[in-house]
Length: 168
Image 1 (tube, one colour):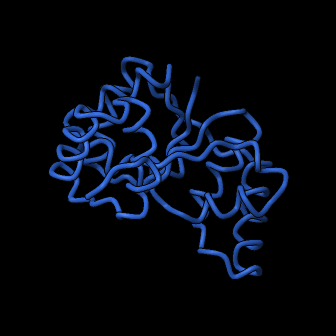
Image 2 (tube, helix red, strand yellow):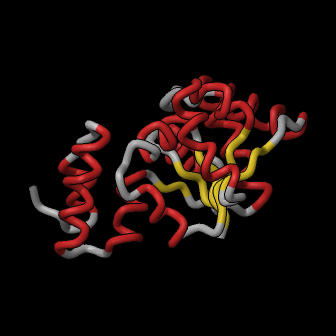
Image 3 (tube, helix red, strand yellow):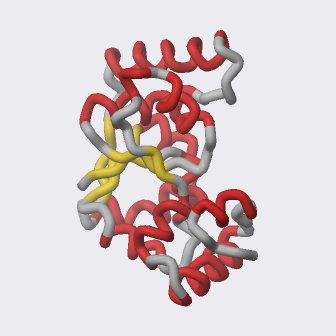
């Protein structure tokens, strides 16, 4: 399975000490050039090893994806949904057309896949979803959540944790 990742997901995941484990869930990760531009020098350097090992590949700018992404940005604005940025919208367009999972720590893509029929087949996962897939729901997950929070400074909401039966 292939996933496409946006900037916010990569910024967090690349700081996680057990980041290599992502490749137990995905054979490779697609990163659009739009996202690579947003990552900055440090993020690109951290991604370099994955690019060199061919576990990450770059998605060029393609006009049809850009047009679709613009439609998503306009739709979310017109419907007063949480704002989706162009790189996120681009990832969502690629995910739909290529059958990839979409990794993002933003909520806007989740709203769009529920709201827009043609996107309902896109699986959108955030870091918590991926951690649960990788570690299950037991003690190992609790350790992973603690490590992830320590490494990234990100704390998952109680509501999200309860979705997986995790009590704080």
